Structure formats: structure tokens, C-alpha cells
Length: 153
Image 1 (cartoon, rainbow, N blue to C red):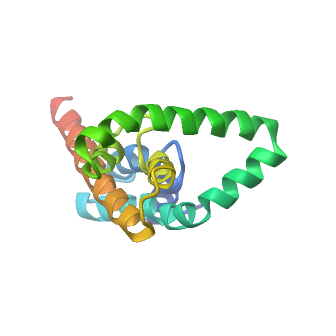
Image 2: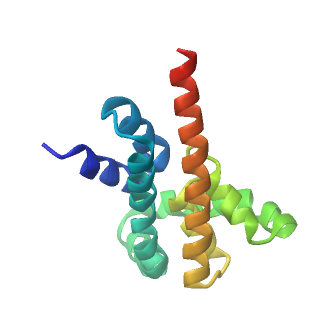
Image 3: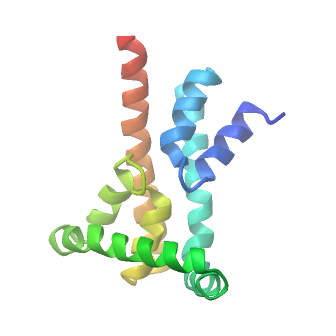
């Protein structure tokens, strides 16, 4: 059995769960205090981004060559990311990436944000910073919604 802290960290590292799943689980199921849950969820969500930004091109090329499923999925994801992010990027600049990552909806988190940063040619450390700020924003929104929901119900 994993500790609540490790479970929160690992859940936040997943591409679908990210902070929007890890933080509510930490707060509601594990009864973790807000600061600990927030820090672990942010850290867990950020960890894969260091690797994804560094290896995205190589990973994408490898997966697309080796698997028809990944070729189709990644082609769809890249097209979707370009489409969703292009207009915002033209209007808002790099702050658009922070907002894109910070909106806690499916397929708008840090994993997709790392794809957007890679596709639009952002520098590595700039991408890390912008994703980090977006993750922090998403964490604040998720924490607010989770704690607000607790108070309502």
C-alpha cells in the first residue's frame, strides 16, 4: 500500500489525472491538509514535464513510427493542441500557455501544455516556468472548487 503522500504525488504525475484529480483525492479521501496536498500535487504534476519537454520530439517520433495507435493519437493531439492554442497564443502571447495549463479541464493540463510548448518552440526553462505557473493556477482553482464544494455539501 502506498502512503497518501506518495499516492498524491503519483496521481498528479498521470496524464489524465494531473492536479485536477490528485488534489481532491488528497483533500477528500486522505484528509491531507491543504498546504501539503497542494505542494505534493503541484510537484507531482511538474515532475513529468521536465522529461516530456526534453524528450518529446524523440518520444513522439519513436511512438508514431512504432505504433499505428500512437501515430493516430499523437497526430490528433498535436493538431488539437495547435488548433486550441494558436489563436490564444497570437492574442495573449506566452501567458496563454499559463492559462491553457491552468484551466483544470480534461486535455488542458501540463502534459498537453508541454506539447504546446514543444510545438510552438518555447525554450526549455521558459516552458518549465510557464507550465509551473499554470499548474499552480490549476491547483488554486481545484483547491477552491474542492473546498467550496465541501462547504456547500
